[in-house]
Length: 311
Image (spheres, rainbow, N blue to C red):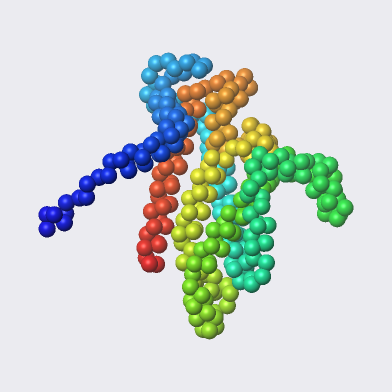
């Protein structure tokens, strides 16, 4: 019995070879991910003068985030990120599920339509933002088309309208990444046994009923992955806002996000005089890191329980 429990001897030459191949990637990861993260967490507890670290500040940097003048910007940016997340869940993931199901029901042209949906995802968000900014600018293509159709009168100033600018950015982001949920959900639907769908059709279930009662519960792992990725990506949103609306989140901070606010604090673009506040920026970055970590773990556990119940 003891001999059975005894572990096999470790093949050290093979392990040395594995370490040799993993080590370069590990060094790069530690240099560009672990080290900056550790220094940011460490620096958030210190007072800064320009780019120089001064004395220990404790939690003062974190406390300053929740009082004027930082709190209005912080709370506004956080609500914009929450709105962005909810909008992407509806416009991108929910619609992506519907499109994937429609493609799943088709017998021809599925591969071509999947490529059409996925094509914008191969474009950089910077390119997408610049493209849509040109399309939506006054005298742009969209304004010309709407004028010719008689749908609008006057100038198209949707990006300069604080009530609509954030909606436009969310829609552009959803268009950019629509192919990802379509691809993932289509793959998930194909893993479900065809006999299950056939039995449901024989029982008289329609396409909508099959999607809701049969396909959707089986797609919980795909929904879990997409929800987690969507949360992380939307709360790290920066490039699309920067290209289309500027680092100030114009107009009047109506498209501001937590990362654009962090950028302004770290690089001196916040306030009328543009003074850099590294301590405040690092505190914000630390809180954002903790938020992403905690919520991601909660989402994974939430969906894991529902996956276990279905299995």
